[in-house]
Length: 287
Image 1 (cartoon, one colour):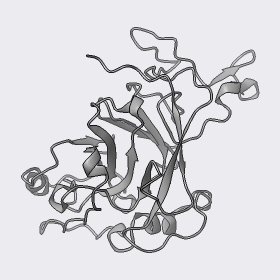
Image 2: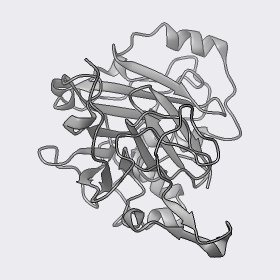
Image 3: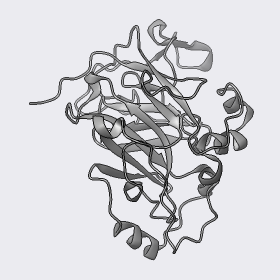
Image 4: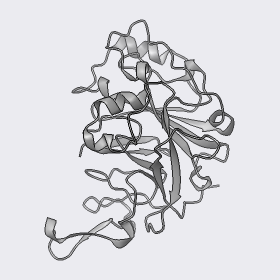
């Protein structure tokens, strides 16, 4: 039976305190839960473990992979390993491919061939102990990523521009386990909940009644640009509903997460990203 489309979208708030796993909707930074170290996805470009960005407990109306899959963990190439495009080393990729992996691992790449991954988690995995990052492959020759020594939160904060540092209450602790909790809030109004995102300039086939979050009073121009009232209180980080990419709208299902660089510590060129966790697609664009 097909999974029912959600009727709500949710804003995601990165809290200014460490996660309380009993009441939060997940956490940003820190370590993923419920997996063995050997199941932690390695980067097939460098041979180092990919950085854990966030773990999100999905509300029931977004559990598109079945009621037993309640959460997901997202991993990314760390910012200090992104500089001009990935240079593939076949021997490292072959060694990573030969490693054991999580049974619900999905790997993705971006336009620069950098690596990302997502793990779909059961309830017992989500509630499980935090994982320990594995050792890098012996073949790894890239510089050691800073997050492995000070944690993702501290590594990002230390290199972030001032506008991104303002998203934090203060400098994070230099610790692998340092997290910030995630709170979930249903959007009061989002006419695009349950609809696949639609770029107004590149209509999908078949077209839908997806609505842009903006409109123009008269001819399109910066002076005539307006936000719809229903979109004015939408958070930048969110689950489903109206997408606000920095550039073109990627083709994705209604089951996606849109998030900013600081929501896990990435290099998106001051832009944002989208993860379709139904189709396992990933996209980002610089700001």
